[in-house]
Image (cartoon, rainbow, N blue to C red; front, side, top):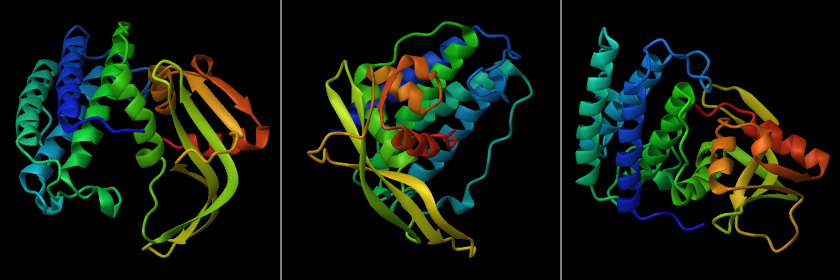
Length: 266
């Protein structure tokens, strides 16, 4: 899977954030967000505002960790929340666009992702999924861009579900699942296995279902999940049901993959 160029991520971040604000501007503030049941649209708007505010700080103060970050105060009215989101997004896009993706920058991800490029990619997908949340709340769903959604399959499986902390160990099994996007002719493969390790707090974790993205292994998949790139990306984020994808393969492999993907990544 080839990643998008940084300029493409920045473009998508801007477009998806603009659509997010546009859709929420037509919603009453107490409208519920079906994909995030604990939230109304005011909560959703403030969430993405906080996210982009935080990453503005990270990029502006790179490569320092965000220990000095101060959270913004939530405005009293929905109109003020939306206005704060727009101003926050404009500042974020400007700061990010002026930063070299190769420069060192803090992230919560693995050591190899401690650079500005992580934020380019991660925040394009954050805006995309929350734009979909806004549209689900408004009942006005539009398509996800195929190039970003195809990359989102890899990002969800490789970053959101596939990270390996330095204190953990992945023990692979000779079983594989393929996530195949029909409209982009791309696939992301994962190898199944288990996760074990002792957390920095001393908590023992042992033989938990896990999986990691791998190159195509040259053997048939034990499980294949097929759909358009948009449907697969939204499915991995629990934004659409199993009816939007086709799943074929062994029951034990499906159960294992289901245990991994059943974790919340909101």
